[in-house]
Each structure stands twice: as C-alpha cells, then as structure tokens.
Image (cartoon, rainbow, N blue to C red; front, side, top):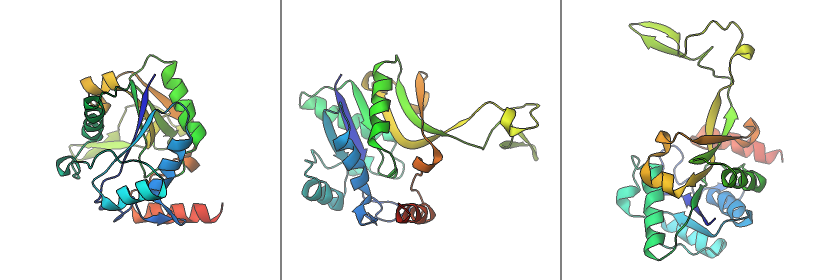
Length: 227
C-alpha cells in the first residue's frame, strides 16, 4: 500500500494570524506535523500543500523537504474544503506517474499527536475495509443529554431520550482533526462528510487540542511549559 502524507498549510489564517509558521515553544507550528510524519512508518511521500513562502522556506531549509508545487490561490481560500486540497495534490502526483492508495492527512493545528498514534491509525486502516480512519476523543457534550436544538422558540434534546444521567448515555465522540487516513478511491467519489465506512481511532483529550484561536494557542503554551 502506497501512502501519501499531506500537510495542508495555507498562508492566511483569521483565528491565529500566521499560525502555520508561528513559533510554539521555539518550533514553527508546522514543524510538529513534519516531525511526526518523517518518523511514521509506511509513508511513501510527504507533501506540504501551501501557498505560503514562509512555509515553503521552513519546509525546505529547516526540514529538508521538497515542496512539489505552490497551491493555487483559488483553492487557498477560507471557503476551500479539505477535499479540494487533497484532490489537487492527488491529481498533481498522478500527473507525474505517482499513484497512491491512501492519504494520511495531518493538519498543522494538532501539535500534540504522537508518532505511535499515526502508526496505529495506518495499521487500523490497512486491516479494515473502510473509507477512512479518523482520530476522535470522547466528549461530555452529548446529544442524548446536554445538547439541545431550538424549534419554534423552544429547546429540546438533539436526540430525544429519557436519560437522566449523562453516564448512562451512549458515548459520543468529537472528531479532533488530528489524524485522517483516507482511501484515495473513496476520496475521488465522495466528500469526507459523505463517507459511510468510517472507523474511529480514540485519543485522550490531552492529545486532542486543536489550535483554532489565540486562547487555544495559550493553552498549548501552558501545556508545553509543564513538559
């Protein structure tokens, strides 16, 4: 099985300006994802998909990675989906005669993932008949208990139930954005959210922090200061 690791890192970011090259504990944020990708087993190629000169400079000079293309601006927008970014990379490599069976998607905003998590996700994907393996963490926010929708001015449980204790509810999971292993064939035929055969890889909350806001960044700095 041939696996292409894609690390998407576009130039513009509203939540945390310049986050992909911003230093977190003296390391560029994208460096955390590059480091674990280089250590992981079974990866045939690492692709940095970016339109940022800063990211390209970091990848090539600091981490000795060849950046194969500059991502077009039309798929580097706030509205650009991950699917579009992945398909663009797949089509680029296929035009060069390089065909892959699976994509390992590592978003730079998850700096606390460990290489063993990636290896275990890849092995889970290899032995399963699935569209995708995705990392999750259990969440206390539960649609059977404390998540509500509003209809006609009144709120009601998102999933109607008679549960009186959260502990009795079915477990629910948050996709933490850290690791995705995706079938290329599935990706070519459907969007990520349309995939039916999805297998979870559970991570604890301490490794699941996704850096989306400046508050998230401050939490990450505090965590790293205690290590």
